[in-house]
Length: 265
Image (cartoon, rainbow, N blue to C red; front, side):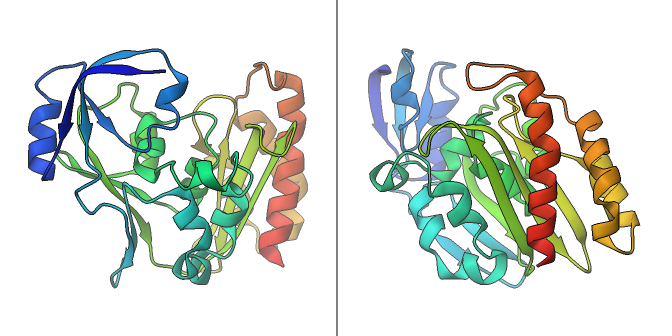
């Protein structure tokens, strides 16, 4: 269980940011579902639940996910299904249970860059961007590559408003356990294939060499054999309590075949 010395209920993002940077041990509260699993003492816990950051909205270019939007919101939202199919429902439906998913927030999950996340690979495959209060917009890919956690507030996730064929596949020991390996793929004739791999068990990343190879073929089915070899060489995996390195290496090729075949259907 985490603990904190002071509690601050922010009335604006400006207020929250000013309070955040006062002390390196100040923290923004999301759903706190994963914070509770730790044993860290914080100085000030900053609550942003009053800032109307729970929303899924659209404009001409992007679909925006507010930082306080929950996993359950993503699962059942019809706008997301219209543009991206069942990728969010498939990726999130086995995360513990409905009560837990109704509490876990998009912003906290992405900002923390959890390696075990099933959401982050799905967002990567959709070419999402992160909007930070102080820094502004940055691609999710570049944000994940940063080694340090920024002293900033994640305001929303921006997903390009493009209809895509999508697929999410993972392997778990049991239905509600963390993924041993997961993979998210999106496809359109205009943009080609995008492939994201997570639970390696470290942070999710794009399989760029594999994507380039597949997109160079006129017939995607014909590229599968070479692509399966490429992704096994490109994506570095490791061992942890859920699975060995060698097992994850075998899963890479298997998940790639399944996701590619699904988006082509």
